[in-house]
Length: 98
Image 1: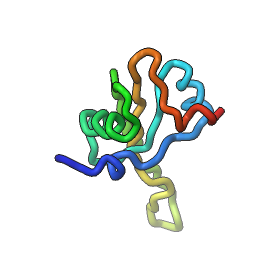
Image 2 (image 1 turned 90 degrees about the vertical axis):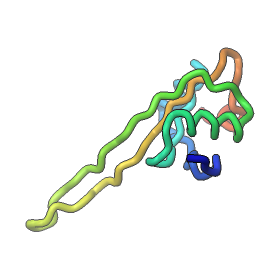
Image 3 (image 1 turned 180 degrees about the vertical axis):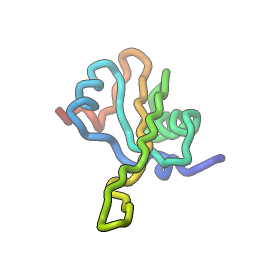
């Protein structure tokens, strides 16, 4: 499935753990729930012009709660990708974030 790379990559994950991974040339992004590892790697390569070595995908299931007798969704499901770049490469947009 050929997609626009800007629709595959939703936004960067800005957490303390993801900021610590940048020292290991790893970056974390929220990605489209239908995207696979190959599509994510191609999108990162096209957007940031870097060489992707490895892509790890995490699927988070939705979390449910109760409202009276009904079961309601409290937190939506999402997909997150941890991208490992070739040694020595950086994504400039993340350099100022700490």
